[in-house]
Image (cartoon, rainbow, N blue to C red; front, side):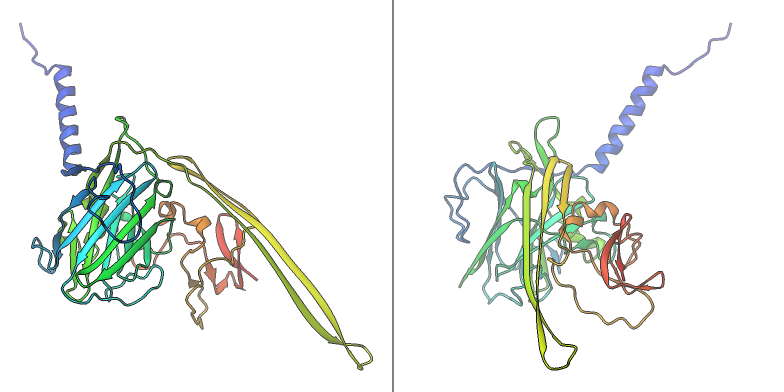
Length: 372
């Protein structure tokens, strides 16, 4: 009599589950920190007092460039905490030499200015993140990061949200305090009722071309290594609840124009007054933590940041980045980048389109194109 030997089904399932768990563990970040809740009130003035920040978490920075793993050239203290309504971040950027400042311009973030930044992967998906930065001038720069900061330009500087910063300088360095409303961040709670976000802190010293980061991030991925959400630290917020944003932006435009035309007899000019007016409304409301309603009535597309001037003498349309806030919400879901400026879809065209001159933007189907 022959006895057939077979592996029990239960053992096969157990081995399969163990292999899945081991693969998942390899993909997860090793580090995890708990961000404490701040019980005292914080006055946003750039003075980082010990008493009001005593409940915050201190983040130690490590040099990423030019010498990976070394201590920062200048002493830096980064503090992070939160309340029910706000997420706070502060930096004591000590410096024995005068700081480098190049501009007060909004969204200015270049290598000729010192910088402090906080990056948040709010959904902890290791792909997308929002970055909030400031310089010794106290200007604000914010951007959204896509595709784990891979590619030649993996961020969108035209993204923006509501937040505040105050900065002061003295002989010992410069000091910054950030306050980000919870309603400006989109995130979800896990099964434990906690919020886990990817967190990265950065200080940039312009004169040394030095990047100091928390956590300790290797420069092996190129210039944007410090912006990779997959390399951020998991930050746990134990008592933080999503707050749906509600933004109402009405507008009213009015104007008076005059035109003088010569009468038929050619003896006098007749004046004609033209009164123009227009009104509209934009509403943004967060229905759930991952679903936002953007509603517009008679949108005024002119009320946006001005584009950089370009001269186009070719037969091909120009590429202009999307600056209208109505189209900025989670726009990375539609940013199928193929390197450089190549994109599968973009919403603005100026130049020639199907043989016609593009003079202004209008909605055609699911695409924003110019119309004559």
